[in-house]
Length: 351
Image 1 (tube, rainbow, N blue to C red):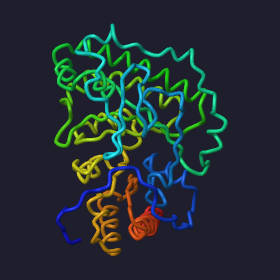
Image 2 (image 1 turned 90 degrees about the vertical axis):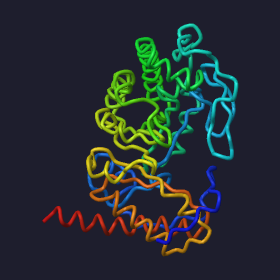
Image 3 (image 1 turned 180 degrees about the horizontal axis):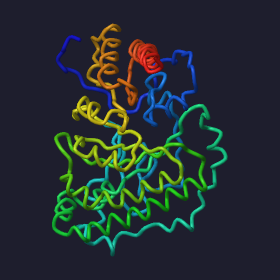
Image 4 (image 1 turned 180 degrees about the vertical axis):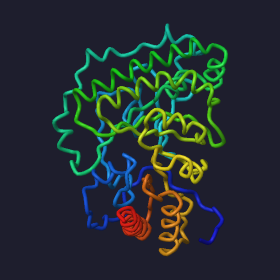
């Protein structure tokens, strides 16, 4: 594909799909196909995020205000939605702590036993598609919860200077996360997939050395993993940044897939781990949103990604398309090309 200068600004906000989805001849349900991918088996086509899955959200869950809104969470942290980037951030100059060592005095966990999550659950059940995987986002994982309380400089210094105190903090947050998950499963509408949202990396590396992650975050994450598996849920590691050095821990924790960004060496990860950890990859917006791109270039790019990361399955694709041409080309090429590719692989396995 021709390399063109990135002389345009990509659209980061949430946008509606630009046209109707083509009707595909699914050989099995979208839900069962997603399961095959997450269970490290060969699917019938590459699943597509937001097309082959559904989502549910409990309005009583104030771990963070609802996506797209401003407000305070249960802990008193103020969040502001930034439309230009399509995401929330802690409102500037409003951290509730000067130092993370104040967490025992200033962090008040909600009393979940005093809350009723059943209100609206029946209506929510009717809004999800039983033929698709239903996901639930658990916002602010262990590390992001820390970053929401004080400056990153204070938080990261604390991990190194007072690791015992930090370990107790993460264990306490894990206790709360487990209780919240149990309550959601017990009282809210059913879901199949827990999305653990916790960004562990920057554009160039992880926020902490893998050894620090192993010492402080891995033990409480294992307890959460045990609960997820006990409840019979699939789970997804949503972790932005260059976090490929933490992939061994993702595998150890039993994540079914990782929402990986392109700055990671995903080809090497795929070669090393195969389908032990499926990859959800977002197609490059600088390709799909290029105003000069042709339909054949779109289709060629999709085929290239599937050939590179989709061998034997283990690939989920996400994308943002702004025009009917790009949307139709992406969705039809993903379905048709991967269906033929996996049919050939399946035939070879059966010989």
